[in-house]
Image (cartoon, rainbow, N blue to C red; front, side, top):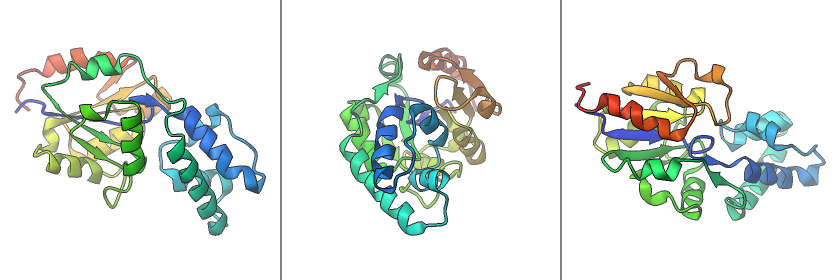
Length: 219
């Protein structure tokens, strides 16, 4: 059976969202006098969801403050989700060449926010299903989001490939039993985090020759 489904991470894979997330973090923290973060600091925090992000920044000893800061972040980010976020080079051109594949996004961003961002930057129409951190009971690196997407698209995991910039993407793919995992080096994580990926690419369009090698292969 050939490859039928391509699963993409969002932040750091399709879109550079760091500036908008940084602005929302600093807005959320402002009333409490915490030090502002810059984009480089934000890059290290992204990937495990908003609750974990603020636990890293504040510590997990004061749940009331974390909850208030998180709500301030979500309110602000929802209104400014695409002020500065940009699609990475070659993404749209490549997606337009992938018409023979089903395509999913699996993000550790909440589903509503994921869809809102995709609509704002005009690429939601390329995808058959959007899975956020709250779509399934567990988020990446759990395999559940991948299994959910595959089930809804009537595809077996071994007919899917996952593409992402994080070890969470690679780990989730391996646990779910996908055919191959592809790590991107232009995103938020250092190369060492992608060491278990089957393929490493430095530009989004490098997906195309990899897929060509699987054309017609029985898996």
